[in-house]
Amino acid sequence: MATEYDGFAHVQDTNLYYEVSGKGQPVLLISGLGGNAEMWLRQAEQLAEKYQVIRFDNRGAGRSDAADGPYTIQMMAADSVQLLDALDITTAHIVGSSMGGMIAQEVAIQYPDKALSLTLIATQCGGPHAFGAEEENATALRELATIDMTPQERARAWVPFTLSPEFRESNPDMVEEYVKITGQYPCSTDALRAQWSALMGYDSWERLQYVVAPTLILQGSQDKLVPPENADVLGVRIPDAEVVFIEGAGHSLAFESADRVNELMMDFFERKADGGMSPQD
Image (cartoon, rainbow, N blue to C red; front, side):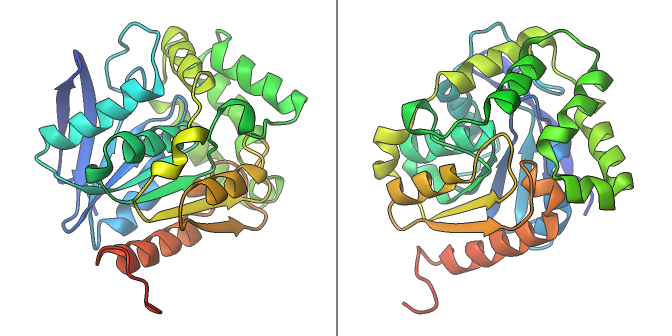
């Protein structure tokens, strides 16, 4: 389904670009480090058949303003909530991937009345209780987030760390689409560094117990950047959370395993739309 309307919302002295499609219960999709709204294209088309889908570019990313840093996850969570307010949306299913999953956690913790449900994809709690990537992968991630390079160089350099080897080998055309989307609306290096500092400064572990929204945690078993153990940490700390591992999938789970992710999310939304009751209840 095509975008029904798009525009800019002025929140916290920053103009955020957004796109809205479909009708039904709202679903807010929050991107990860340096990501833009197009990263959710494989979700938006399917979800918009039953839901109102809101995609946007975080501050510093895509078509949104690159406000001066430093940024914090709390700041970007407030951006997300104020975007919903600007669109006259009272509550939404909150979905976040990677750094966007941190933002989504913070929305659920600080603004519980905004979250019909919470879906966390390939993310972690941050801080000392998070499981870090292996040293080689962690170093690569830090360099990709902080070193000057052209948008296309950066977009292609992400691929070995975000998509699984099996997916890359079997889907060369999809890999090229991923590179195109990733590099289409690039962050400046300064804005990427500001997002990186927000990510590195985040720690929700102590406060995850206060999440009251029904929560689904999705994790790829071959994630090089957010080790799978992080899903179990979130699952233990968030009351009554559901954890699903997708075998063989890498970090960019929503892109690589879009059909499975969409199926799991839509089933979850349907089960939780009545206030958290599942079929067996």
